[in-house]
Length: 418
Image 1 (cartoon, rainbow, N blue to C red):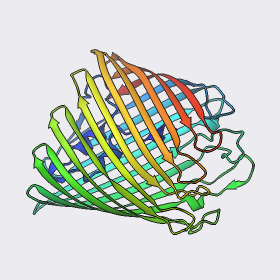
Image 2 (cartoon, rainbow, N blue to C red):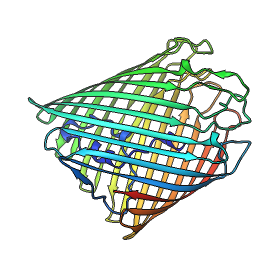
Image 3 (cartoon, rainbow, N blue to C red):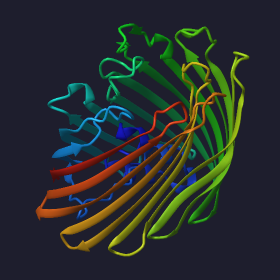
Image 4 (cartoon, rainbow, N blue to C red):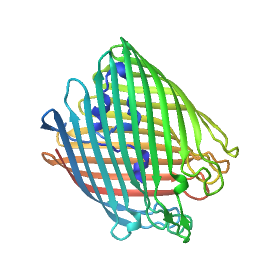
């Protein structure tokens, strides 16, 4: 599903994340929570509800796909209906903060319901500014992801779409000592996967994929000047699966550590970003799996080159433990770039390019590569009403057997925003 590349939050989250004071830089994971979709033709005038500001949008589009099942062998064309909706609420307080954002996108195929896809996310953030230069933050999110069932001719594929859920909660406590700040973070994530049947008729019981992920981090940051903040960070994580041994008899669960150093910078009014480099290690109890020690790179940059051009970039390194046969998990690296050009007062052109590299850490496979390219335009028909035309191409290069596929999509739709 297109959501696998992970850039799909409401615009409110951008201001939410960047509202964190520079002294306490990066106490919220900006690389995981940013939305870089600047396609609104004009900055939205939010509604005011007391000390809160709020807004939202809803859209409906008709689309065409030349490979609805994302299949390397059995390409099938189809027309689909794509709908989306989002809403956000943001406090306008001098001290403390509360923000909320929700987003849902659905693609429905009238003649092939098994290709339907849904992605939904809810995100909430709260901050308390306490005496003695203490700050407490709480972040929560919920994700629902329904993927297409995939190629119906592959026996091991599910016989219907499955829905996976992720529930995440994190807490941060920051203490400032002048230009120095220390942040302690703790978090937990619950991963839930729906049971389905395979095309061959046997049960795909996925209970051994359900897990808890625990995470703790300690960060020290220093304001080098009013527009630059340097930080170092060390962390620990643990994966605990509901079943200690998976369906193939491998022992699951792992522990990991990481260390990184970086800069948060805001040198110009039009330019801001963050970059961090480090190493992470993941250690598995089953001797069949090799321990993982790899460099990491995480970055985000937004640059308003002119009044008409916006450029954005994200790089992200992540790990997730999975129960695929013979593999300890997946090491992923994401690269994303977007450019927006306002050609006229009512016309905006945009382009996006995403790369996803997924190494399943198996000796019999190479890494999977996904490239996603989007180009399109927005035209403001009337205030708060936008016509969008978009072309999207996905290319998937499989690291296992003959799993390569490509898909072309075309979308034409209307969006109402406030």
